[in-house]
Every structure is written in structure tokens, then in C-alpha cells.
Length: 173
Figure (cartoon, helix red, strand yellow):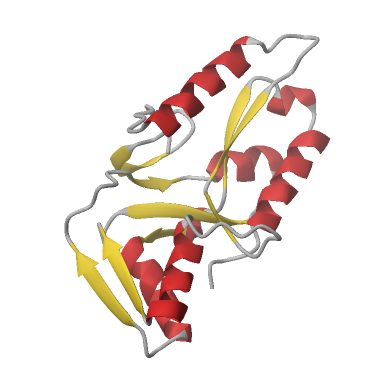
């Protein structure tokens, strides 16, 4: 959410463009946390891709789960902004990233920001719906060009891979 809308692939050094109160709060929180970083209190920011996967308290407001719910219940996925990009990360990979950060040397994490996910897990909303349709071939995909959500970003996860040797293992499929 921090990256807002970009035609380029964004990384941790890209300009942030919060488009909602939610993302403004995230950006302000990151700034505050990084300002607290010192020798006695080391901070690190993790910018997670959009979560997917089973959990005890399922969130159906996240895109993969929302599309799956609609496909199963309504036999239809309605897409607004079909060509808008989103990055995804499985909940297990999110927890593994947290463990990697906790086990990493201070010099690699103190005061740093890491995107958490996998570059190969960037999908347009339409591509995501088509993946679901592979498993549920009888569903309809309905596309509307108007979108109340203007976020559109493809994210690089190269920094966490190269600096911490972290690689997300699970895919949307």
C-alpha cells in the first residue's frame, strides 16, 4: 500500500505514495519506528506483500481469499481494475521472513526496510482470477474498468533475497 501507483517495479528505495488513510498511517508508523533506531533499540521494517493462505481467523477482505470466496459462493469473480498489479505472499512465508530477520546479524537489519514476498508472485487482478479459474473452470470472470482502488504496483523482493538469502517458497497456486 505504501507504494500507491507506479508503472515501474518498485523496491525499498522507491518513492512512497500513500493513497489512503491506511497507507498514510503505515508510512507515518515506519518513519516513527526508523527514527527510534539506535545502538540500544534496533528497528527493522517489513513491508509484506498481500497475504494469502489458510489461517484460524480467515480474512476475506484480502484479494486471493475474496476472489476464492466469490468464485465458490457466487460462481463469479468481479474484477475492478483488471490490469492493476499486486504482489502476494503466503502466511507461512511471512512467518519465515520474520524468523529470518530475528536470526540475521544486526548490521543487515538494523534501520533497514525489506519488502517480503517473491518477485514471481506479482500478478494482475485478471491473472489472479485466471489462476483460480484453472481450479474452478465453471466460474465466470466479470471485468469492470472502473476501480475505486487506484493502487497499482509490481514489487521487487531482491533486497531480502540478496541480503538475507530469504526466498518465499509458496505460490498463489
